[in-house]
Length: 104
Image (cartoon, rainbow, N blue to C red):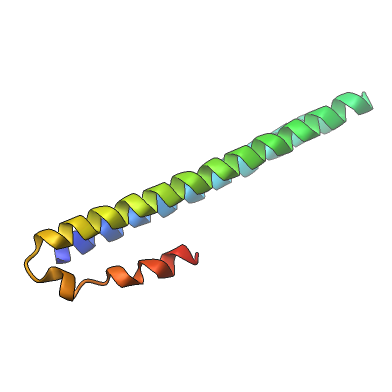
C-alpha cells in the first residue's frame, strides 16, 4: 500500500500546485486586462473591457476548479484501484478520509 500512497500523495501535490499556478495566472491576466481597460478614454469601451476582463477571470476560475476536482477524483480512484490489487489492503486503507479533501 505504501507505493500506492506515495503515488497518490505525489499526484495530489501536483494537482494542488497546478491549481495554484492556474489561479495565479488568472489573477495576473485579470490585472493586465483591467489596467488596459482603464487606460481607455471612452466610458462605454472601458465598461465593456472591464466586463470582458471579469468574465474571462470567472471562466478561468471555473475551469481551474473543474480541473482540480477532476484531478483529485481521478487520483483517489486510481488509489482505490491500486489498493484493491493489494491483498487485504482495503481493510487498512485510508480511503475513507478522501472526504476531508472535498472540504477544501
